[in-house]
Image (cartoon, rainbow, N blue to C red; front, side):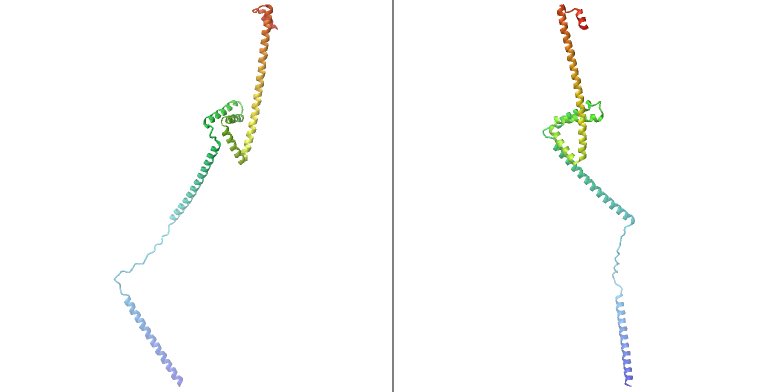
Length: 246
């Protein structure tokens, strides 16, 4: 009996709690609805417009144009770099050539008129060997020009030889070519010496013949005088005929 009374009391208490909770919830909802109505009243100001974010994306044509421009700029920069490098090499070569010329040319020698004379000597060598082949003409001209340069510009020619020796040590192929040229020059020199010796021999033979003829004429005159003295006459044709027969 006590338990049944307790159960009824607990059920009554639970029902009261549920009613109280529902009443509280309804009141809260009503208060929320009232506050929302108050907040939903129209304002006298315009509502701010939402910010619009515009995202621009390039077109395909713009992408290709930008790529082409970038490629052209890169190639242009490379071209400028190559041009600058080439200009640097040319400037360096020009400085080297200028320094080499200053080392070769002697300050106390006149280059301009003597160089003309050397050219004339080279031309004379070509004229001397005009009936020979082209190699011999070239070598003869070179030999004449070299001899004239040693005579007219000795210091400059010596300095030029020093520079050529440096180049030969630096480039062995040039040394081989120089050796070949020296051999050819030696051959030309030998041939020229042989021609001069032959001419000298012919000249000596001519001198001997002239001397012999002169001696014969002298002996003929002496004999003629003797015969004339014997016959005591200078205009007798018989004397001339007799001498001619002898």
